[in-house]
Image 1 (cartoon, rainbow, N blue to C red):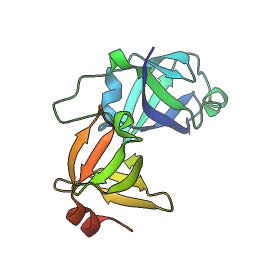
Image 2 (image 1 turned 90 degrees about the vertical axis):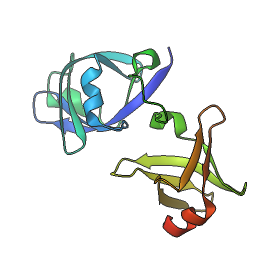
Image 3 (image 1 turned 45 degrees about the vertical axis):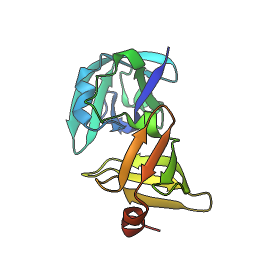
Image 4 (image 1 turned 180 degrees about the vertical axis):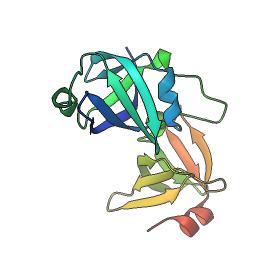
Length: 165
């Protein structure tokens, strides 16, 4: 089964086994369409979903109290790839672009996409080998995303205007 990582368990929430999740989706609301998630290959049915402040709060079958929820801290949540909601043209899952090589429009290799932070405009963390560089994935900065080649092309001029070096 191909899996798509959709979030990470941050901590237990309350005493009834609910978990707080950092979503790796554009919207926390996406979790309302999931029926089940996998943590380390183990399937959990979703009993309840609520969202707030960009986080997801899940109640999972088999996670009855805070102690059980604590054991899930730091684990990645995944769904079967075929159960992932369809995306509009030009959109992609963060999991699909992580590890992509980033090049300028002049062909210069900058590094590898290490992380994406969800914000009004997503912020990409670029691993340049000796340091990490943050830059917004704004229009005019990111020119193309090729999922097949795992290659992202950025405007060199705009990149160096907005990157936090």
